[in-house]
Length: 260
Ligand code: MLT
Image 1 (tube, rainbow, N blue to C red):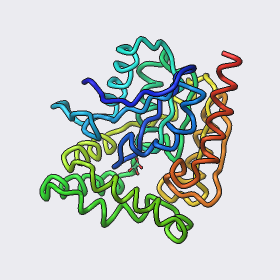
Image 2 (image 1 turned 60 degrees about the vertical axis):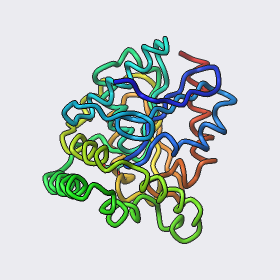
Image 3 (image 1 turned 45 degrees about the horizontal axis):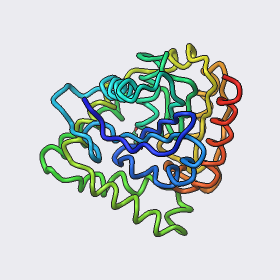
């Protein structure tokens, strides 16, 4: 599968993997602020944005293999890999399947545990509705209000409007496929225990989808990780507090470039 990816800037390669149900458009501010320092590569995961879905069975592993192929096609041996939420699940699968590609790891607003039964059943219900209706109405109704924190809901109408636009632009077929892929994903805590590269775990203090407890569990599993809790941000911390997010990523990638 050939992914569409925006690729801007020069220097240490930094790959940023987007959340569900968004696309690489969510990384606009990161491209603007980080590309003067690093080579910032933001793929659309299969089915989203400019990438086609293909005919494979739903799996996060397939998405991780796509990212490894993208790096190979670009002639990049290793990159700092960052992922937010679903992008984090893909980043962890990449650590499991292609560890030689990972120079450093950024996990934002994500979790290493698999879905409990109830959450898995809920995903499959949503996937059925997406497939039956062929629109993303169910995501706008049920998921959109939870994607940002209460501070953004109250005070940042432009950001919420942007997120709504991104959700509405998602193809229903890709959203159903990705829900099934996430429902099937394995626990990644053992993978994180084996991931010795430097890691930065970020979580919005107001995130209710992937919580501070989920972030702490990942930090405890990773041998070499630090934790940043971003105040007044929910699940989409990179969009809700881009300056704090980008500053932390800049310091992290700079330190990797200096020492590894
Ligand atoms: C995301 O933001 O990627 C999703 O909320 C992840 C999930 O549904 O677990």
